[in-house]
Length: 203
Image (cartoon, rainbow, N blue to C red; front, side, top):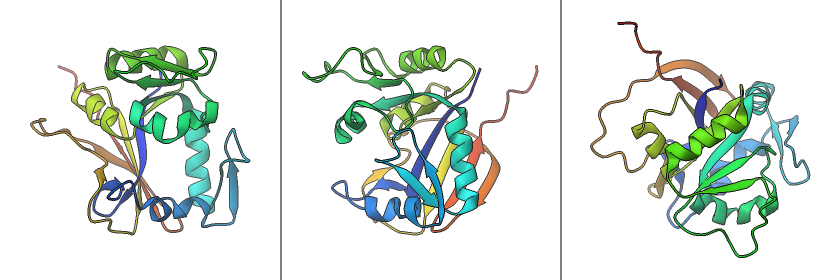
């Protein structure tokens, strides 16, 4: 069975968007800052152009990814990725509201109304031996609290946004959660940091 991870472009002060959903041009500038092309499943909509080191990092993610779990806010913000997620994998949308009126049940999006844990379980089943990506946003905090997140991937961008949406929000009262640093990848305009939860010790 694969891992459950989250990945997000994050500012030096820990935000995945600035005030009023701003700052995305700075947070994602690294995606087109280099010479090496890494197409997604919808290359006309998204093809990364990065350093070779970042391209290897992205290819590993693409090869491992089998399903995604996202919140309704992200789904609506992207207009449901116009019917097809850039990774072209099943997507499970955590929500308390019914699907949009124009939603096609044959699309790769499944709306889950009983929480993140249920969505991750469905995503694991769909992904098989491959990994499940969660978030970003509040779904990440819910997965952390439930002990379901194995890996944090932070694409740290050298900008300070001064406010907005934190990468790890709504974790007040949560006991400390330890991670081990397993990889650092230096790209153009970004540093990719990978942290993994240590395996439980026997006994």
